[in-house]
Amino acid sequence: MKYVVDHHKKHVHEQRYSLDNCGVDRIPSDAIEFTDSQDYIKDLENTHSYVKCPYCHEVPLLID
Image (spheres, rainbow, N blue to C red):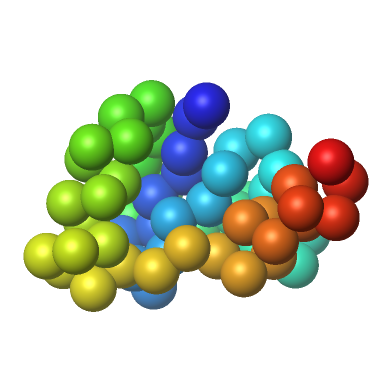
């Protein structure tokens, strides 16, 4: 699973579920990062106050 990290807004997006509402396409190039590491994402959430995007983290529950 790939993640898109928005360091400007401190949001974590799931790449395969990102939608227009997420604004991933509007993240500045100097603030975007792509990763596969769940441990890195957990660290960002636990120690740096990053949050999961409500749009792309809730969608999988509706689709599955």
